Every structure is written in C-alpha cells, then in structure tokens.
Amino acid sequence: MSRKEKKSRVEDIIQVLNLSKAKNTIIGGPLIRGVSGGERKRTNIANELLVSPSLLLTDEPTSGLDHGTALNLLKTLKELAHAGLTVITTIHQPSSQMFHLFDRLVLLIDGSIVYEGDAKKSVDYFAGIGLTVPSYHNPADFMMGLVFNQPNPESRKMFVDQLTDDWKEHRQSSIEKTNTAIKKEASEAKEIADSVTVKKYPTGTISQTLTLGNRAIIQTKGQSLTFINFFQTIAVALITGVLWWQMEPNEARFRDRFGALFFILVFSGGFIPMINSLTSFPLEKVVLIRERASGTYRLSAYFLAKTLTDIPFDFIFPVIFVIISYWMIGLRKQFERFLIFLVVVLVTTFTSSGFGLMLSACVKDLRTALTLSTVTFLIIMLLAGFYVMIHHMPVWIRWTHYLAYLKYGLDALVLNEFEHRHFNSSGERTNFPQYQDGQIPGEAVINTQDVVVYSIVGSIFIIFAWGIFFRVIAFIALKYNYKIKK
Image (spheres, rainbow, N blue to C red):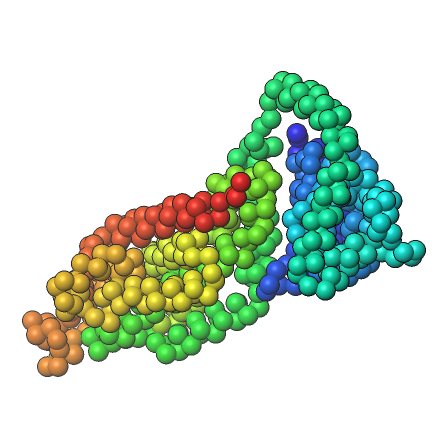
C-alpha cells in the first residue's frame, strides 16, 4: 500500500468514526488533557480498523461514558457491522436503546449461557419459559433483575441452573443441524485460509519505525517543550553562572572548579534526563500492549522509534544549560574546549536517558521506579570520585567506581579543563610545594583526581557504551514485561 493510499484510508476511517473535529487534537493522558472520553474510545477503534481486521472485539466500550456518547459509539459499531465487519462487544447493563441495536445476543449469568441467538427473539424466548418481559421495560434490566432479586444465594443458584437447563433443552433440538452446518463452513474456511498467506504485520519495520517516530515526536514535543522546562533550565543555569562567576585560574579555586564541572554534569546530563525517561513506558503500557496484540507493529520498531526521537529532545535543555553556564563560570575560553565539554555532557545525557529507560522497562510501577532511580543515581554519584576520592574508599568496595558512568564523564571534563594549561600557585599555602613560587601545571592537578581513563575520547566511548548497554537491557525487559497475553 502506497503512502497516498494509507493517508486516504486514515481519512476514510476518521470520517466513518466522526473524528474530524478531533483530527488535530492530541490524545492526551494522565498529565496532559486531550480528546474527550468518547473520542478516545473511537480513536482506539479507529486504530484497530487501520489494519483491516475481519473481526473487531471491544470490551465494554461504553464504560465511563455518558448515555448519549455511549449510544453514538454503539451506533457507529453497528454501522461498521453492517458494512461487513464482524463486531463482538461485551456490555454491562445496556439501556433499552442500546439493547435493541444488537443483532445477536449472548446472555451470560455467572459464566453460564442462558440465551444465544437473535437479540430481538430473546424476549419471545423468555416468555416461552414463563418469564414475560413487561411492556415498556428494558429487556436487559428485566433479565438481570430476575437473578439479582432472588432472596438468597441458594435460590439464585437454583434459578440460574434452571435458566441454563432450559436453554440447553431449547438448543438440543437443533444442535445436530447446527453442527452439520458449522462443520461445512469450517471446512470451507480452512480451504480458503490454507490458500491465503497472511503477513503478521501489514507494513515493514522501516515504515513502522518512521510512522511511530512521527507519532513520538508529536507526543514528546507537547510533553517536553513546555514553558516550565525552559524556565527551570535557564533559571538554574543563571544561578549556577552567578555562584561560580568568572573563576580566576588559580589554585584557590580548584575545588570550586571541580564542583562546577560535577554539578553541570549531574544536573543537566544526569538527573534530569534520567527522570524524564522514567515515564516513557508505564504511561504507554496499555496502548503498547493493545496495539501490539492487534498486530499493528513490531516491538523493535516501537522501541527504536521511541529512543531515536527522544534523543533530540533530551539534548535541547543540556545545550541551553551549558551555553549559559559555561561562559558565565569562566571555564576554558577556547571554542574547541567548549565543544568538547558540550559533547561530554550530551553523551552523558544519552546514557542517563538510557538508564531511565532501563528502569522504566524493568519496573512497571512508576512510584517504585522513581524511588529506585533516586537511590541508584545517588549511589552512582557517590562512586564518581567527587565526594569521596577513589583511593580513600575501602578496598573491598573500591572496584565499584568502574560501574559509575558519571566517573568517566567527570574524568573527561577534568581532562578538558586542566590539561595543557597552568594555574597560579597559592604560594606558601600551596598543596603543590614543588610549584610554590610559580605556576602549577594542569597535569599535576589531574594526577590528584584518581582519573581512570587518561583520554577524553576513551572516556566518551565508555560512557556511550554504557548508554547502549542500558538500552539493550531496556529492550529485553520491555519484551518480557510487556509481552502479549495469548
């Protein structure tokens, strides 16, 4: 199917389900207001119709809707049924108008079938067994009332058993004839099915990824590019710049310089992107499972589209933060050093986002994921070597700093800031006696920081590798935790 044909089909479905007014309205969710309840229900149905199913099964589609909206939804389903689509709907306590919309009816009470057949003939059937529906009375309410108005559980069970037996006797007379017809139809259907090759998915992986990517961009744009996010980023960047305003290149500001590097790395490239990624999967769980169950797309296409489209939005705010704070603080003025600094922060952002995706996929409950992410991220911060020097840690736990990706980011920023330059000594109070009367080489300062990898490129590569690793684990966890129930 060409792209033009796909667009035409989408437009046709929008018209059939009367969604024209909501065509350019965001679906919304728990945090963002979007379409109405009725429009959301019809959108769910529209999504299923895209793949041209032969059968549409809706589970209580009128739940949570007012009477008018629910009635219009059922009328739409009836129109689809008359157009050739088989529609099966479960419904609880339908109104009289809704009841008369159904062509065929299966009435279940406590899991037992007490009627199956033409909906209009159900009233005559119950009248035939002595249960006459009063005039101007809702048949569905009457049938349910007969059961629930029984004086005690024992009489209710006896009444249901009697209804079940009456139905079995009614069906027994025509069951042989029905079975013969069913076997014939089943044989013909099998011959047709054997001659037709059905693809599992209607489109290829690339097409699915592009379409899902476009949808993800629309969703993420509304959630990420908000006034409050811009305000938060700019405000904190300005405060950071003011607190560390134009640091002098001398020994007295070494600790302050390390603090500025670590804060920028943790805030803009660590904590914020990780938190933003935590809501990725839990909020989309229901939609993801439903769409995959209907064969709309592959999980790999969804995951690839989600992760690729999130990256540009994850990078916007760290870029703004670094541009503002870097020059206000007075870090190295060479433009190439600024670009290296920015790359390190962005790669760390990529990895922190992957870390959030991993937790989001592994932990289904959002509150638990938030708690776990806070604890694990604090541990990673402590192991990065800023608060406690690596060589001061107990020997038995010292090896864990290799697992802290923030450590490699901090090392890269320290190398970028201190290598190949000199700083003014504090004279007699210096911590570098050999340079008491001169300038301290940046390399001497670097040697005091327990740097793991003495290469900016090497550190960037390790951080990026952690980001890929987190995403692989996220995909595996997503496939396991969000699998389709068969």
